[in-house]
Amino acid sequence: MATINLDAVSRWYGNVVAVNGITMSVGPGVTGLLGPNGAGKTTLIALMAGFLSPSAGTVTLDGATIWRNTEIYRTVGLVPEREISFGYLTGQQFVLANAELHGLPDPGAACRRALEVVEMVEPAARRIGTYSKGMRQRVKLASALVHDPSVLLLDEPFNGVDPRQRLHLMALLQRFGAEGRTVLFSSHILEEVEQVARQIEVVVAGRHAASGDFRKIRRLMTDRPHRYLVRSSDDRALAAALIADPSTSGIEVDLAEGALRVQAVDFGRFTTLLPKVARDHGIRLLTVSPSDESLESVFSYLVAA
Image (cartoon, rainbow, N blue to C red):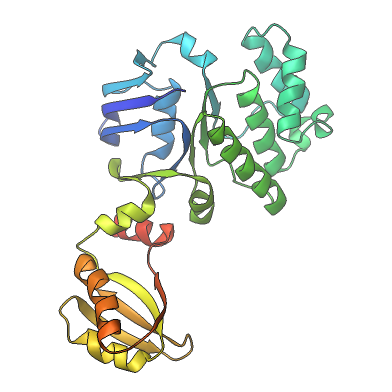
């Protein structure tokens, strides 16, 4: 059970600020790191892995400073976004070398276990230079897992992975989180993050924009209207009753969906108003579902803010 803490962390390169005053905590379970290109995600992961020093602030793992602390590498596994440069090695040689660098008592057995986890036992005899992009991603993950770390940091791990392999990797990350490991991964594919991560951390222009369950984040965004899809026994009568209340700013009858599209500017008032109006007018509510509580909607709002 390991926790990484960042306290007012900044990192700059000359006049370029990559990360600006970020404070956040990443604990056991699966956390998704989101942000547009150039937001500072890769820099953050490098700081957490101990490969970069913070220009200001501190990065710690269970209270121990990560930078220049070689003992941390016994606990942390890293899957970088950059390509493997050892194309002349076989997959087995690459993973075995990492097992030996960690000083494991039986590096051969550790190598085999890691390759089995990522389903790369058979291709491991081939040179990495002959691998597809997805296979290179999996052998990088095997290398990161070879010493059985309690913290796993992955930078765009799904890049180039085919659909079957992607499902397998997603299931692996969920399993690691359920085992109590601290797993943080960045991805630009929001659907993957939504399915795998219990928590998200959003970085925009080097700053920490949001943290937590994305549905809760959406509900806290009170400055933006909430959109609902509502089906009832009498959509037109319900629309007429709701539009008169100041908690709604727009209602559209969607004939194709057979439902109302409601835009609510006062979330609290609307959630109380809707069942009351339905009851008072003898209307039966069939479906009430938010139409903008997806991770994609929340991410779009945060990036545009």
